[in-house]
Length: 160
Image (cartoon, rainbow, N blue to C red; front, side, top):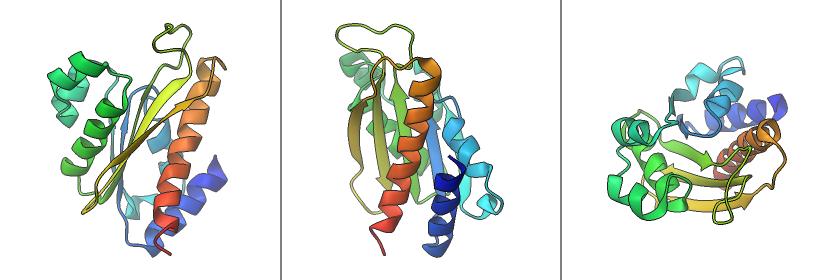
């Protein structure tokens, strides 16, 4: 993960980009990976760990109606989380993650399902869902963290 975060920090510095994170199932792991890199203070503003629905609403402005209609593990909630992180920070790029790390899940929302969103100043946010499968809690969280770092890096690399 260190190499991916190093590369992300270098790209963000080159593009004058400031990042914020909004995390549920990863519990701050994305922010930790970024801030493990020396010099990350120049490109990282803040991380929101919003594990509960109440925290998603209070800290990020996720609407109760969105949670009721789609559930916390949904692209709709991820989009609102990312938009909230962007609007409640000094960042111009935000990533959001919400998912089912396990153990458990349901037929409707299985273990390993993680929804991601990216929001960037002046652009429409975008979301995607990845089915990592029932890898176990630690591996799902690590895979989600790696995927979020890759999404951020991809967003910056597309500017080059």
